[in-house]
Image (cartoon, rainbow over all chains, first blue to last red; front, side):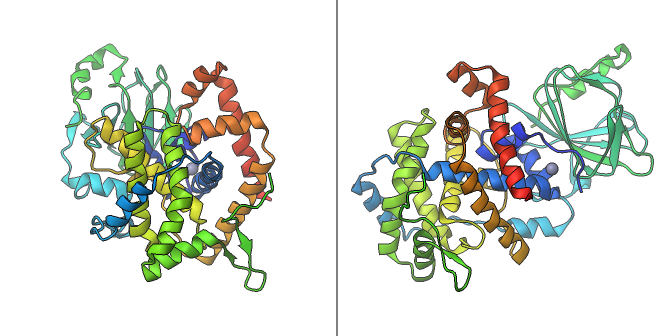
Length: 218
Length: 198
Ligand SMILES: [Zn+2]
């Protein structure tokens, strides 16, 4: 069971549908690991539905009803079962849709000897959506965040000065936070990161890395 | 606040199951492709969907009509997947309307994305009796909580959930500090959590 969760404000925006697409996808994936947050979001949905029922109705003309009635025989768009994707492997369904395969099929960019990154395209113009693969025991150089960063651990785990995180754990860092995460010693760590601005490493000797990190999702 | 409206849930004491007019309507649509039931459903919900579409205030009247049509078509197409034990008819419709509105916003912003709002929203799956019992309890408790909510909190919740405004947009619109907005939303949700823990 996940120990680190999105805060209430974020769950609220997620449920209200106002969170950006890439961030929503990340929160949604946390929910697939976390019944506690699922329950909160469910209750919020019911609450929102109550507000919906209490809205002041705005009249809709009969011609609208006629249009809809005349379209009822149209073929329903094809849908797929989310479950089918989810059960295929331990990976969240959303990720499987975006990856078209598994982690080994991705186009990884090597950043350091222990870190590689693969950008996935969600179509969200405001946030990058990337998978980080950190080798067991590997350390990501100390860096600060120009923008916010959302992280969800998918496999393995990592730790930083604030704690140790395992699969399903969700972290949110504000701009300006400095940290230096290290993967746990016994297993490689894969996590999802949603960033609203490219990372900049704080230590001078890592400056050269910046161009790599600024590679945009294709 | 306790006035009965058509569509309010009535508990059938004998079976303990909750039934309501709109759930039955949806079942008739799913099972018998009943167009009369659909028209009735439309007359009740389409004006709420339109109100929801326009409450965000950035959609034009044309787009609001487009949204009404899209949501009601989905109601017809997806009625089969509606399970009254999992959600009330209005929660089910609200979820469709919310996701369609989000997708419409993204289309209008020319987002090209492989993910729909449906894909990233919470699945109301789970056929286990425990989950369904739990969901029914949630419904009752949310209703109780909403009926006792102070007006200023209800007002902010409506801005967040119906108008789809971020906390900071609500803050600047109501000329309140961001912290005040956040704490009012949190307060309401925490009340909900306390109710659910009983
Ligand atoms: Zn959680």
